[in-house]
Image (tube, rainbow, N blue to C red; front, side):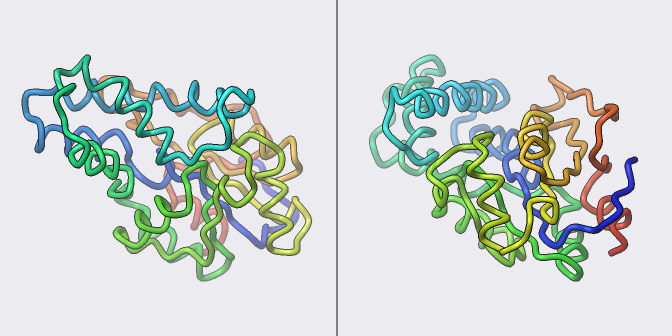
Length: 235
């Protein structure tokens, strides 16, 4: 693990996969509400549309669109393939809100509490403000501030997102650390001068698609989970 000569002031957290278990949460809810549907496959199909939809916005093919609305577009496109084309509008609205009900990983509440004791902690997610606020309130996540792509009018890895955190808190980029379970997100942050910490989430895509979370020869920190990160950062 690379030791930094200076500790960050602000820890900015990716949310989907890093802080909350989107796959397990969606698979469980689908399994409970629509037992005839393979919840694991449904969660993966829904998430698979996420990056392509954001790319359409970034390319100017779609206007700026909130993640809630992108999730709904993807949902409408996958329902027929799972035998759910008959769902009425109210059911679709409720199902789309599953993203507001994602459960945190088991280490998160204690880990964030310890990190908050020493650092400013905030979200930096492509999720929109309504989604992040409701998700965080339901799970009692103790953020000091909720920041979103919506605030900056750009999705990660656009430099406006990473640089935006530093500007919001009035610190140079090197005093912000992005905490994420995704190497592309961390690379984007490092390119903007931020410190980084990789969090192992081997089950992000479920037990059927275990992620390789072995350490890479990178400049950032590497932690098993948020408790390990808290320990490494002296919390």
